[in-house]
Structures are given as C-alpha cells and as structure tokens.
Image (cartoon, rainbow, N blue to C red):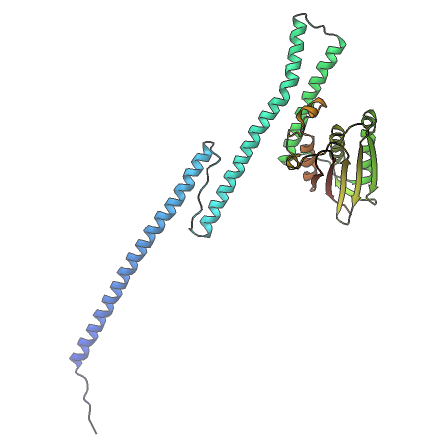
Length: 324
C-alpha cells in the first residue's frame, strides 16, 4: 500500500497566489475589453443617432422656412426612429398638401371674385362719368353681382367650418320622406321653367336619420341644382331614397351631359368645374359639391359619383347612418 504525504503548505500557498493573480488579471483584461467595446459601440451609435437627428433637424428647419417638400430618408436605427421619421414625413406631406390647397383656394377665390367686382366697378365708373344711368335694370344687375359675392362668401365659410369640424348643427331625428318632399317642393318650379322632368322614387320604407334638417336639405338642393345645370330641356332627373338595415341612401340621377372619367375624382373639390364657361354662365361657383361632401361627412356619411361618360348622365349617391 502506497502512502501519500500531505502537500507542502508553501507550494499550496504559491499555487493559490498564482491562481488569484491570474484570475484578477483575466478579470481586469475582460473589464478593459468590455469597456473598450462599450465605448466603441457608444461612439458608433452616438454618431449614427446624431447623424439621423441632424437629418431630422435639417428637414425641420427647411419645413419651418416653407419648404414643405423636405423629407427625412429612412434608416435602420430601430423601430422607434423609423416610426419618428415616418411620422415626420407624413406631417411634411400633409403640410405640403395643405399649402398647395391654400394657394389653390386663394387663386380660385380671387378668380371667382374678379368678375363680379369688375362688373360692379365698371358700372359704377360709367355712372359717375354719366355714360350709364342708375336705372332699375342697372341697379338690379348690380344687386345680382353683390348677391353672388355674398353667396360665395357664405359658401366658403360653410365649407371651411365643416372641414375644421366647426360646423354648427341642430340635431334631430328626421324622416327621409320629409327630406325628399321638401327638396322636391324647392326644386319643382326651377325644373318646370327649364322643361326638365323631376321624378321621385321613394323606397326608404319609413327610414329616419339623425342630423340637421336644414343642412341635409341643402345637400339635396345642391345636388338637384347641379343636375339641373348639366341637363337640357327634355332630360330627366330622378331623386331616389332607399335604405337597408344600417344605411339610408339618397341619390340624384340625371340623363344630362355626363362626366368624363378623368373628372370624377375631382368633382367634390372646391371651385372645380367640369365645364367652366357653362357653370359660370349658370351662376355656379364650383363649390356646391364641396359643400355636399362637407355636410355629409359631418353627419358621418359619404357621397359617391358615377357616370358612364359624356352624354350618359351622372349618378350622385349619399349614404347616411340610419337611425333605428
């Protein structure tokens, strides 16, 4: 049997000291490597974050100075930065669209006001020079031009209020049959004067809607006026009311001039006209259909238009939530 002797305490002590020294050295080297790596990663990330923020800052400065076409290129900095950049670009895009609409509105509004203002100014100057007399015919014509300016002002105010969600409404439960009856009564004489047949198709089955009676009546009046401006003697316009379990449908269909496909998506824009000369001759401001859309959307509904093309008439359909 082999006898084993106890290890020399000095050897054990030196081994333990060597182990402790190597462990501490390894830990120190690991800490140094970790610190260097973290510093390096922090520097790289800081530079990338700074570069991205500088792009956002530069784009924001451009937007602040009126350059709404400024965009921030998308990067790979994580979901939060991607979402921020996407939100900024959406904001810039909406500001660009709003600015374009504002410029277009001001241009169109100036164009609409130019004709009546020039007419009134011309006649007033002629009367001051003694060229024209202030007879009843002249005064009637001047009154018509000022009325046109007042209507234009009221229409623009109404559309702006609706689009800014400031449209005042007195909400009541309204019978669809009553709306149709009122619209028919208001339009009957003008349709008869132009020899255009107005037919009523009532299929609403006693349906009701929740809304402002005067505003919704204006929707039907504007649609019927629009149809009358784009029909000829002998044409027909159908005012139809229908419903299902959730929606009330009000439509105005005519057999008139029709609308080319490239115009359909623009019909509800302010001051947009398919036939500029004809609409102005008939007193249209190009804002009636924009009012229709604004009022309908304020009631939680929608409006659509269809046409088979020029010479095939047009169909405008309003959908409103049914009140049960």
